[in-house]
Image (tube, rainbow, N blue to C red; front, side):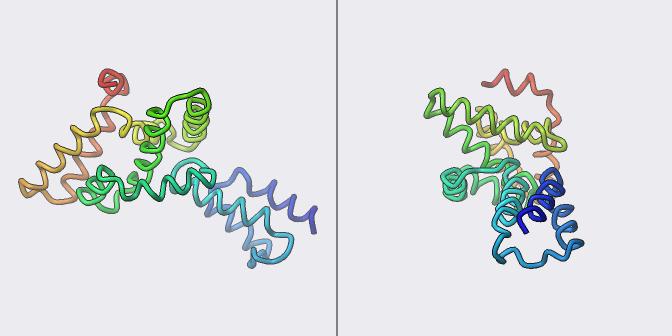
Length: 178
C-alpha cells in the first residue's frame, strides 16, 4: 500500500488540483480517510490552499489568513468588488505586509519563500502584482478610487474593470510608491 501511495503522490504532486483529483478518481481512490491515505490527503489540502492563496500556508499562517478576512481593507475591497478572483490573493498580501512590519531575518526568508512559490505558479508575474498590492501605499489610493466610483453610481462590473487596469501598470510604477 505504501508504495502505491508513494506512486500516486509522485504522479499528482506537480499537477494542479483538478488534474490531481482526476488522476485519483481514475485510479479509483475515492476515500482519502482510509488508513494509509494521510499523505495524499495532506497533499490535496495543500493544493487546495495553494489555489486559494497561491502558496501553501503553514497552520499559523492559515489562522492569520482567516483572521485577515476581518481586516477593514480586505472587507472594503470585498464589498467594492465582490467575488473577484484575486481577492484571496490580497489576504496573502496582507500576510506579507504583516511579516514586513514585524521584520526580522526569519520573516524576510518566509516572504521570499512565499513569493517564490507564487512566482512558480502559472501567470506568477501577475499573481505577484496582486499579492504585492497591499504592501504598497497605492492600495489605499485604489480603495479610495473604487469607493468614489461606487458612490458615483458605477456598477460592480465597471469597478472591476478599473481595478483590473491597475495591474496593467508596469511594476516599476508600483515600486515608485514603496
